[in-house]
Image (cartoon, one colour):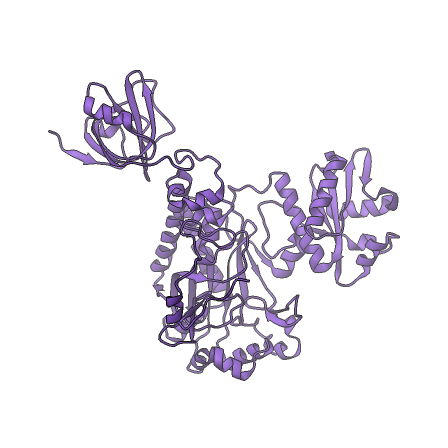
Length: 589
């Protein structure tokens, strides 16, 4: 008897015609036609049709008993499909397996949702039965792309002589901006480890240790409040290198993203990537994460309302820290009054008190405040915003930061309505020139914009004592399609400057020693100038796969409420275990 070859369910082609093959996988679909039974067998690599003839009674009888998701092994001979029965949607669609033997390796109960189609399924059900969800083509495709992205990252840095160094997952509790997960120590009752929010200080210590070029695919943990597209644990590409400038790191990471996109997706991003200053991004797009897949930059039109009798517009036109911003809506003149009411409600949902609109056509202009406007003001606004006949302008007024944010969100809303936010497009950009410090909106205290290890821009160190909020940082963000992929910076390598930054942030000398003493000591032993960057791999994979949620590119994600529905975690543990850790169960009142 001819040798039996074991082949994946996506690996057959006309070259194997006449060969005896064994396929192993899941029953994707069973069909009974004209006395024949057709079983589509599926594994991660694809689907192959197998055909069972009544003439082979033993195999035929088993085939009739099969149900979707049964696990089987099928043996038979590869043959060309009869003319007219080919399936161009399948890689194996020109051939089929004439089966003469089948073994049932495991029976399946009826799944709680269809696995063999990409049907719309409630996410809670998908996450409860994630092992079934993972069998579906969409999830397998996403995890395959994610693998290729990470593989390309490792290859890129390996080719450039970086060392992948694993940093510990049990570390000292140190504030980095988000709440930490704490791990009680059984051997040291009352003391705790923390799970790392990032390897930030550890990778800087590697630079002090002379490693020079480091990378890691790092697991990180943040005990934040539930948010729609965050996870309590996540993965990032972490990179650090010595004796570099901002431009050096950005050039390296720009080369990396081009390499990764080319290797994993077969796409060459347009280069060089655009660079926007932080101030420019806020001014033109209302966000430090601008979506550049489409234009429609914001336009400041406050000057046209400086002398207007319209009180609320005049107030913001004259106030030094306010803006009046126009968002252009191409074709907006065709919108109905109800459409404009909907846009007004959307603006209110973004935080606006209201919305002024003006539309332009060959017959003139219309506006929600037409009785209060004059032709000269409308003409001046139109000229500034470069509105054409058929367009509309949406005007937002308010304090500078709020007006910019609302107008930026409104711009994205318009882009979504017009279909300008193409999920298949990839618009990268850099945002640079961030402030080093900012005011906390709740407490009013000075806090770091990103993290306290970021170096000020060259020559601005002296401003930290006199005007800290004016200091710019050697910091850079990589943005894709309006999503921040990652942040990086040149780090502080001088112990005196690092201490000063901690003190500006309100830490006492005792607190600095308690929380950061090991790090401050390391800086005193010859720290080289260094910098780096980290990318969120979950976000990057989400965008590469054309998904809208990171949960669809993570094998076993938590819900929006940070629960694992499959394992039912977090969950209670026995009191005896708590006792070993010196803990008591908190009451849930």
